[in-house]
Image 1 (cartoon, helix red, strand yellow):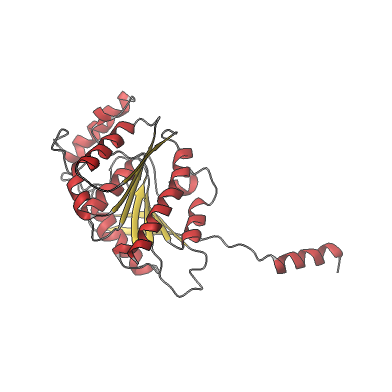
Image 2 (tube, rainbow, N blue to C red):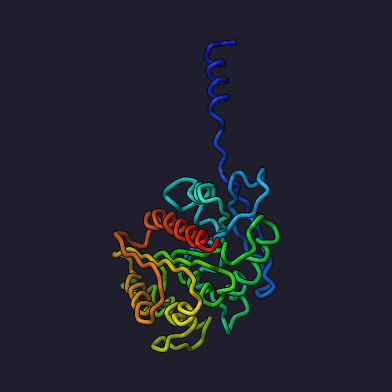
Length: 285
């Protein structure tokens, strides 16, 4: 045997191949909307050999996005797989319509994403994967529109989650609180009218927006993490929610740091969110 071949065999013997977390793509039929939607499920690399259940975290995408965003757009390769292994948890990335904000529309049967996440996707994942079927081992977070979805769904379904987070989230869907992008803002207002009709954008805020759910956030006692870049066009909506939570005495973590509405920011933010949610799980043990 050649010397180089012997060295290769020795290296493989003493340095086992590192396995990445497993990624499944699933398709879940929504009875509420009469359509199927895709999601990815990221499992720890040892999930097939270990007879155990894992906590789960739902990681939501933003507007114009899809279920593969957290795999394709992050600036660090294999970010979700590495986090799933590091914290021994299952990460789920659902896909929804571009400007749905994860709410249930009172006007459109095709926009029932709160029901989809809370009553269709979670039961499907729990039935088909080794998750801990317990709110104390389930979390949710997301970016931009997904940050709104995570905070809203957690506030309205405290029986499902023990921790929720938002990265650069649309904490108020009222486009008057956004900075710049006037043409985009008008498009969003138009789509909101189509899905929600006439809602109250002023105090007392509509329950279709995160700032309208601060009473639920206080009552539910779910661990909350909110962060936003100081150069983000949504910074004022995050500051608004932060101030409202301070005023009503809701415990939460709030961070502003350098950054804008970019994948560089969200790539750096996600590990902090997973750590925060992991620590919330540990406190509930």
